[in-house]
Image 1 (cartoon, helix red, strand yellow):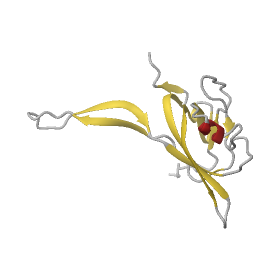
Image 2 (cartoon, rainbow, N blue to C red):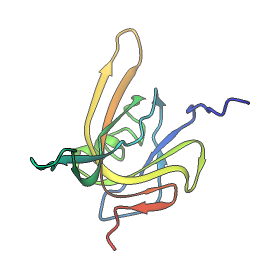
Image 3 (cartoon, rainbow, N blue to C red):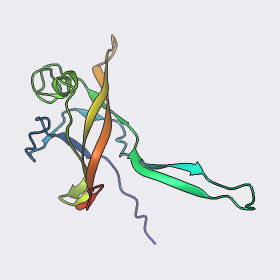
Image 4 (cartoon, helix red, strand yellow):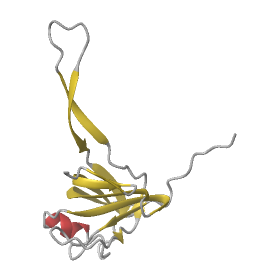
Length: 156
């Protein structure tokens, strides 16, 4: 039996360069993405509701939430997806909610793809004296999302 594992090399993170309420549906790949790319973690907070007269535990789960994710890139100050004029810095400084698309290596429309909205929590830049300029962008998803073509979190 052969190995079915595949490499994640080639994953793309793309952004809508316009913030809500403008929804363009046009995504631009973020340049110079490096390292491992974490997809949003799905979490439901639980509350223990075990009564004193029960001999087994019981829980109630809250709404689905996603944890923030940090992505690393080689920072290019004048790149249109990084800069303060049209890129990640602009979206962050304007406190924008915008669309993000993660498409896995070999993925396509509605296949190995996650589309969501949210905001940047932080951008941490480092200028290494013995290396390259880098940045870590931390993104917090918010609201409904589409996973492999299926919508989640939409009322109705």
